[in-house]
Image (cartoon, rainbow, N blue to C red; front, top):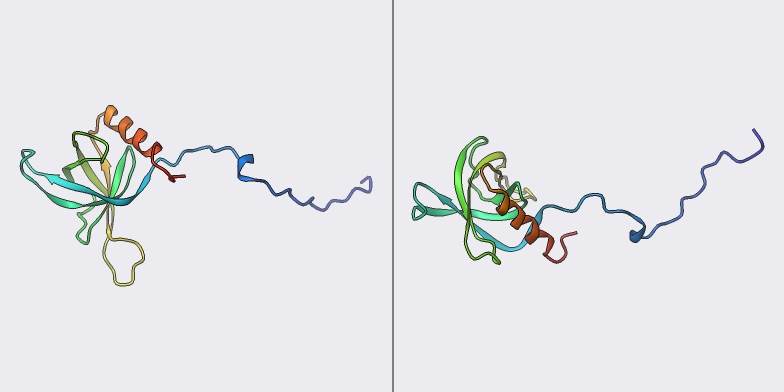
Amino acid sequence: MNGASTRAMPMKLRSRSDFVLLRVNRRMNFRTHLLVLKVEGTPEERSFFGYAKTISRDGMFIATINPKNVGEEFSIEFNPPVKKSPIRCCSTVIWRREYKPGLKRAPGMALKFIDLDESAREFIDSWILNQPNIM
């Protein structure tokens, strides 16, 4: 050794602007309710399904005290406020959280979009990125 200290040098505090954002937050938490309808048969046969709490290009979390079972598939419809026509697709439950007294997180289920076309996925991405305060 040449007499140099082997102690770690204190790290300089960095500002947020010194860091590179590697991955954009691709999910949006809603400040208001996004109504999700379950579609059975024809589009006229719609019923209330729950409120989406988060959404991404691949799926959403729906708050409900009666979540469906993992693996169940069904058609859903939702209409983002900036879109003129509703988005419809088939989805499957990938996980669920049941209601329990004292639970801090909302009960509900995570849905994965199965047949959502790429233009709808791109619309959702664009909509999320244009929302204030998502990062």
